[in-house]
Image (cartoon, rainbow, N blue to C red):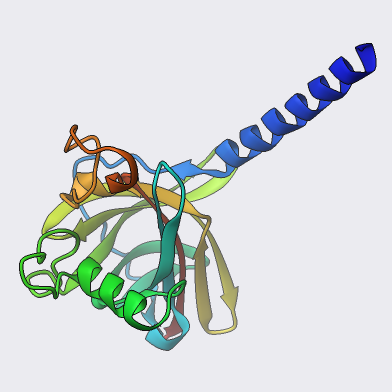
Length: 225
């Protein structure tokens, strides 16, 4: 009996350890009021973003389980860099490029159309790319905190601008700047993306509820101009 109890305790402890590690790895980004965009110094070098080498990975889930994932294309932009430190920059995101990578055929095209708002009568459910074809991220600062580098910036999405902190790693490879983020989350309702949100529509239940958090992971490659 003691052996059974001990085994159950070990399993429970291991489970709690895994859950704890997952929670620690999740970077929840708190949206704050927009801040002033920083200007680069005269010494800074300009790096132009390579759209072909850059990508944003996204994932959305449901509390009851399941979800979808995909990509969004980076359209253009640039960073100003002094040494290996980003001083300023702007990234333009092509919201018309939203792709679902976990589906095929009609399911894939239907989900993409719904997310982009190209379905008549459902334009405003998610991102309404007809009215808001681009999103932007403009750098407002860089800080070191908790052993990580955080890139601060104003994220404008669906006509709403909020300041967010993104955990990133930057590296220089010759004349190439590579900025990669850890996986992080944003609360989509901060940008009025409210479809399926229990926090907005309290009467929603079960499979009709979509998590407010969107998981994102970013890679941006820029070449020295």
